[in-house]
Image (cartoon, rainbow, N blue to C red; front, side, top):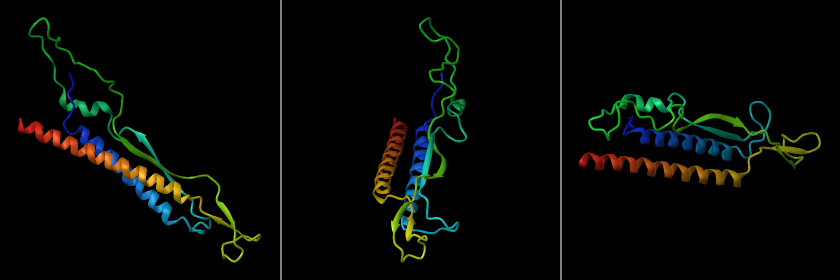
Length: 166
């Protein structure tokens, strides 16, 4: 039988906290550059999007269990035989991580402003493809997810503390 480490839930929550922190940082960068009409490559700022993927970059699900294997022995007919009990798929990764930060391929917003130094020959100015309302919604969502991970982490910590009191 495989027993989870006490700290697996804390590790998963920490991975979630890291992903949400990255998302909030990228969203803050998007908001800060919402009016940047020229970057180092000459184009307007292009919105960035965080892509996340389930599982840890380095560890597989079985890696969490290897140090905690308990073999059950048969002491009576009703007990389990002496074999490893696998109740979960060993290939399932746990947790979450940032897989990539990509640039949003959507078109830039074009506004008519012939007096702007970055306007084209027709007087149109390419503005970043950042929608402040969408960024704020994403920020609130990331913030709530961060709070949920903190709550889960604190609950795990409290359960471990209470188990040690027994």
